Length: 285
Image (cartoon, rainbow, N blue to C red; front, side):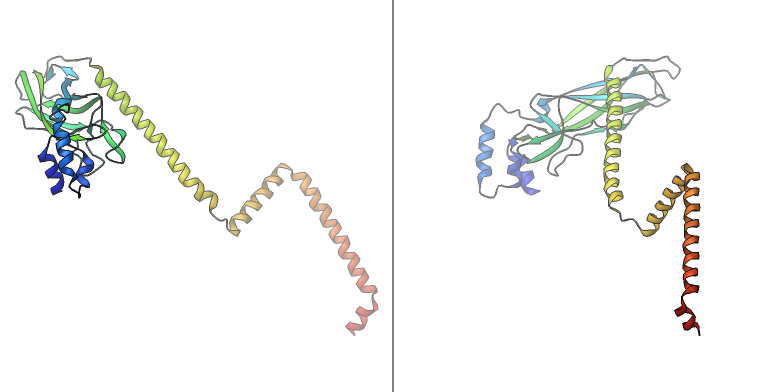
């Protein structure tokens, strides 16, 4: 951890692989290389544009609505997901300070994109392109009419496929027009809220389908490989016989009757042969 902190302090951008394995003195040369590269941004904040949206306006006091903090990330770059894949990466977080008369809650981070990056050697969870973070906003019932501002702090770390910049904290201001509690209100018509609902629904359905397929695959081998007991085999045989009898009852009855007649005749013949055999009589004496 001390080495990671050192890497973040000594230069504006250091390859992440150098944070974990630089025991040969190459960190200094890498640092000089990236410090000399004037094409790299000096901070993560330069690569992330932030906008705020509201689902309805004005917002009557005491009512709740949805809001969005929309991140637009420069092409070729990404920011780490809220829950980063690797411990040494800085996740995206949005924190709201206390604002008299306004309450922010239920922060919902976007679904991450999986990217395979050279410096990590594995796929990472990231946000790229446009990434909206949703939340709920509610003015207190006693809030007076007028424009209020909800102040927040966005923490991001921008990376490309080779390096990560130092994390930045971006101040976020969400203006909320508060009206009387009985005032009429209308949706703003911002499509981002409809798109988010559709994406969340599609993701939920896809996940449910994947989980169902995985469960079916997990149960199928165990069921097919499980040995059948003698009781199960006997039960199966009895069920098959009963099913056949129900379909061909008369035929089976005839077969059983013929079998019993033949069996009786055979037994009678054997008994008759036994009575006529003198050896049987001598043994009885």
